[in-house]
Image (tube, rainbow, N blue to C red):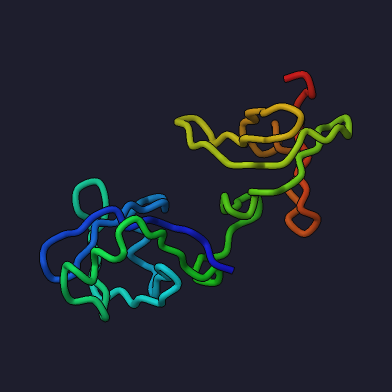
Length: 160
């Protein structure tokens, strides 16, 4: 399984470097992963570093600006196995997408569609009969996350 971790958003210089927007936190974590899967190709990162609010990177097989231009807008994926294992009560966002959300009364609220990062805590966007925004707060709002059963139990009223 592959996980989307960034996107190529620009060119940097004439020697094939690209500007990368990282979805990792912190953004420089993306530098730790290689190879990257871009446009269904395996690209080995030869050099990468933080630059401004993003990252710049160069690949072993791309040596000029024209070759790099063909990658503009492409998503960057890595193998799921490249990610470190999580502790109990820690989850990667992509593991939560698609889980069925059931509240403490046994009412199905929908499925996790996406997540939003906020200053206080992450928020689940749950799509069902209506869209719900549920704070991802373990043991207070989130009662159980069962990845095997693709199920999340929450302490959340169906009327919210």
